[in-house]
Image (tube, rainbow, N blue to C red):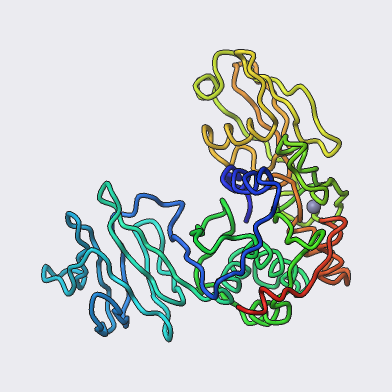
Length: 383
Ligand SMILES: [Zn+2]
């Protein structure tokens, strides 16, 4: 779920805003996704047979566990425990059209990916693992990864429209990632029947504003109300009007709706923010900090400080951007937070509750993105 850094997505969307014109490219029928984004650098990859090698030659591997390692500028694929490589090449492509490609790395258990998986050598002895996947399989994978089992169907549809909308703003040359920095994609391992049906039922539909696909923002839990994009991302001229604050009393069943209290030791806080205490100067109506003063006098936006806090002290310290700061007698910093994520756009737990109350995916999307509407897209229909 959305509770990690949003820096990349913010930069990504800022570039589009700054351009003043949304790029609405005809989306290709496949997308490229770099895997294990949150686990870099990848030093070795486990492959689970049966598998089919497509390049540099065609070959079927029987059931078993295989190990792919980097040796100089080459990749070596061998049965685990064997010193005899089956393939030595700078680039190896696996074909997952029928069975999928089952992969794992040291820190990630086996996952299955539909489509092709291309592996190649990167600088610094690491391996790039890239999934080239049909757009619909990717959308089903994202919606399955971003939602828990038993999530209501209308909330699944809302999520599917958002992912398609994000792709409609995606340049064909861009490569996606698989972590919560953008949208979580765990291949087809978590795919569920109800997600496939939900994606099929809204296929080709985009969330639009003034005939353009919207900038997609969502988060796990707003804990009482969302915030305007202007406030969170501090860019009044560039943020579109539909990223505005709305009340949300619907996410109370989220595990993140309760107050989280965390402690950061004085030493760790000094290392992250400097000698002294950071101070929140202003909050928006939803309770998210707008400005934070660092001990050296520098002013950060509430969002910038939240990113700094997560990167330096760990994302568990303030899962949500609705936070306050305090101190303990020994000088340790206390962080109080509710919700999870930046609080802009759709609240996923709120969306699920609205669906339980009988709202449709269109109602849900129009609630969290006021002034927008769902439209069929000719461009998407071409996929
Ligand atoms: Zn909410």
